[in-house]
Length: 224
Image 1 (spheres, helix red, strand yellow):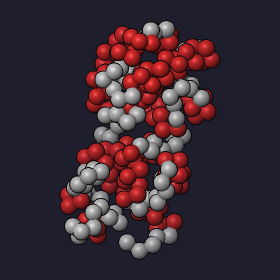
Image 2 (tube, one colour):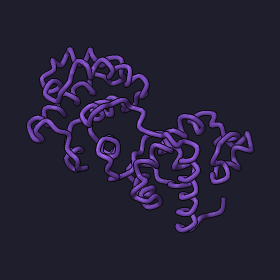
Image 3 (tube, helix red, strand yellow):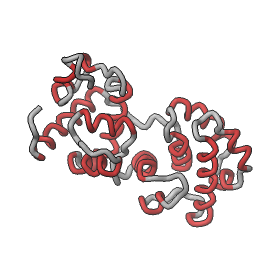
Image 4 (spheres, rainbow, N blue to C red):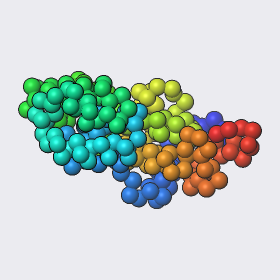
């Protein structure tokens, strides 16, 4: 694909958004939650972990700890044991407990609704904050950039940046603000179901005509 102008890339992104929306009309956050606190905890646990495994763990966890205060008062060793099936469980248990202690101390036990307040909490970076704001509060503050979004942003020619912050900035310039949360869901779903890290299914890809990597997929010597 020849070098694109910003306008051309924006137009192609609009086409990508429309086509992915057609393919994945039910795309959504795949972490199970019933309130903002549960989503916050689940997202902290999901770092470098599989959402399916997180959902298995949180099914019991959210029955045991039903409030911010309950997490804040948890015995550290017991909380660690409750989440030990998740990678990096010691750090995550410590962050969840400290995060909830700050929520109790500074936010009345409620999950705040600003990026600055969320990222001031233990274990919460911009990605986690975007997940919570977009899915628990329906607020499009930014684009979630996880490994799937980062990979597809590069393959689809939407960003050549290497850091999540810069990739997010590139995507925010291309996608209307009202679609930021939805767009991240679409890329994540496509990344899990079609454009995998290894052996992406380029032959069956629904957005192949809009993808700069399609030429490479036609040549086995050039791995996408």
